[in-house]
Length: 494
Ligand code: CTP
Picture 1 (tube, rainbow, N blue to C red):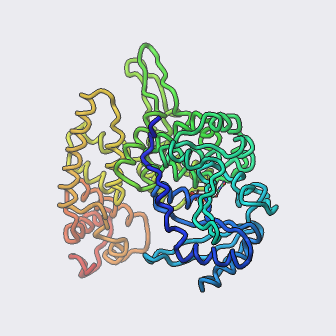
Picture 2 (cartoon, rainbow, N blue to C red):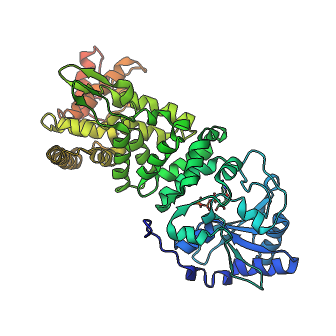
Picture 3 (cartoon, rainbow, N blue to C red):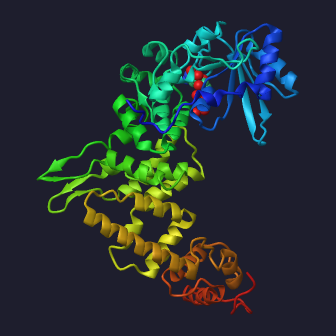
């Protein structure tokens, strides 16, 4: 079987690794202390795959904290942060290229490795005890740091073979590995998606069997893995696995509700689950922005709740963009995603996702384009990426038409923005101006005048300029029965 994934595994990439100052120092200290020490886990996996490595994990047969402190001293590094409850310690080190690298130390343990599980186990063990309690064979690879066998790979579960074949498999029976830490079920799917690997059948069947156990895992840990899936090159792979494993429904039932295509009177609608993940892949091909990708995930989330069959018209989803935008905070809150401007950005994109194409249904007027620019503001480029990604029709003629419409809107957007600069619209007249001009205190008239000015600019009746806006303010104030203060006929300095 030829590997479907894009990585080649080359053990030569490990040559010389243990000559790095950190590993050399750790080896020296381990020899002096009479303990065995190893580089282990994701770092070794990524070295073999030639992926950029982030943090480094070092495990020793003995007291991980004392070992970390001794290595930090040897390297003149520090401070060492100790997590007593978990029996781990870490410090940061500056790499040759100047980047900071986190080095985490742990004593080999017999029981579950996970430092995040609810009751961390710290029973000391050997390197092989430790390796068998890790999540996957490809994450259980270790490199010896001690002098006699420095640089030797310790691979009791054929992790290198699994890396070559592109297989995610647990070292022990999967039910045991997953019951140690149910988050690993999600991690299996995350690694399969990031690396383009296949989840071994018994491992996948165990995920299906144990899916409910994900319920004990915190929303933060779940969304960390979910975000990594969303940020993968082809995120739809992960969502299909999440759906088929039974994990998705545990934490994201609204997305599962998108599944299925109903038919009435011979008229069907598209399956919105598969459409959504296709849109996500399309966005992923153009942007690494996590929140834009989230907008793709959520753009049609309210379709099941707004779906109607209207005789003569077929399936409709009226208002799904607004209802969808209103669903975003609830979903973000439950998943403990940030409730700040990132969420607002996602909401905005969901709310506006139909606007660019809807624009083309009528003639594309400057005023409609100006309003879109005004409503989208800085999110306009992201909105246009989402909007283009949303064109997933299999009907080539339809697709061609939509893409042509899209191109027209893009062109208009550029022209109007160049002319009128509404993207970062700042009202040319402030509430302060209005209060001073008519010598009034805060009241409803101020908001009304501001709205008239804004609408006049967006409709192209006046230019986005202080002189013309001032003129309009004076007229509107008079209409409202306000008296202009002396000397306020023309604009004062902004
Ligand atoms: N690990 C585990 N079970 C978990 C989490 C982690 O067995 N639930 C082990 C694995 O050996 C893993 C190592 O701890 O390789 C480090 O974990 P982590 O830093 O979370 O992941 P990485 O494998 O390094 O991958 P990434 O950096 O992509 O998150």
